[in-house]
Length: 282
Length: 275
Image (cartoon, rainbow over all chains, first blue to last red; front, side, top):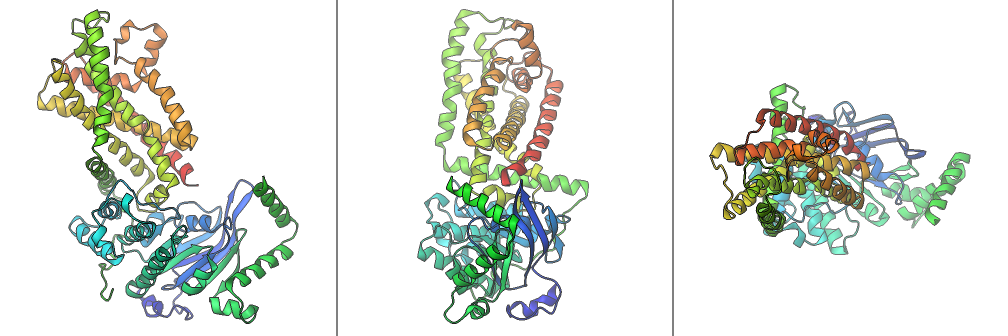
């Protein structure tokens, strides 16, 4: 896997080595009659910041849960750095640092203790535990607040603490589910700043879901647009926009692909759409 | 951010499968959950006080009243002595039986998902949380022993007895915590878990030997109390702390088996909470 190091710093470049950070083929996940993930093919290249975009309910979180071994796929294959999520879940988990959508730090513990728990759960050797915890707290800029209870942290600080929790095992892939949701602009900037630093300084691959198109445009090397459990478009944000026309935004790109899905979708999709609308309305 | 602040990846990518390594692995997870429970107790000591109120009231009001009544056939023991292990067992039950609420909270806050993306088997998550409840139970042992000594209960205080009683309280609390987590995994909501927790606490407590001997019960309640793990916890605690005749090996075997079953079942329903 060291062969991938060379292009880790050239995220846009064509991959020479076959190993992808994440490789999905025909992934499906149903909840009852609803196909949350409906035949997803996806490649996340080593070293890139990859954005999985789509409105709420597009299936992003379910897709992430399958990729992180939380949910078994109903069909298809998912591999993280060549390791299959269903056959080798524990190997996959050791490669992943995961930050869920909610602010998930434990308010009744200090920042340091929050990180310490994950150091233990990832088998960081006892002698390195304190140093490693201090290191990741420094990386996210929480050294000064490390011994305060996490309940006293601001939203942005909690997010950074969660990043530290995810980093303590030194993962190769960082998975962030809606990392800036509910944060104020300062908090958002501080989170993205850390993400860029991590990619730059630690050669980390970052997979991020968001429904903020402007953030994806600004921060992601490549994006995939997800709609009703399917990937409708994949590419570099600039290329996707250029294909639509001058002055187009990612929002426009998404709208076009979403409309396209409406038109081409056929009967079953329309039924499903109608059902969803009905559910939403009451 | 100029230097690489984190050490290079270690080689522990493969899950270790050899049996002793697996035991150590699970053990390290249980330890991790117990450590954070101790840290939480350190940060918020007020809960220690509120947890002490109920056993104190049971011993002071119920215990001293019944002590004077001589209404319960205790085999010659002062009723307060007879009651103390029962109140201790009850307080460990109360600590544990709402533990599932924490798991539901952790589900809502995304904590559970985060825990399950660590190389930690589901059974280790459940067992870890069970033994974390056990840590709280040890606190209850300390509280009730001190209260009992103040009230003049004739306790047996040999170190092995206190250690044994703590171990029994830990395993008992761990079992009831897994029961609570199982219910959490089935009902998936705090409110319903509160309701069910309250509904089962009373029969578990009253249909046990905590307040009166099983022989004094009607036959059908006696039957229930024989399958009630709390009866075995009380029997062991009474034998250890008061020195009554107890079936310590049977009690230990029943509680340990109940815990194994509890961990297995709770681990099986846990995935329902991360869907």
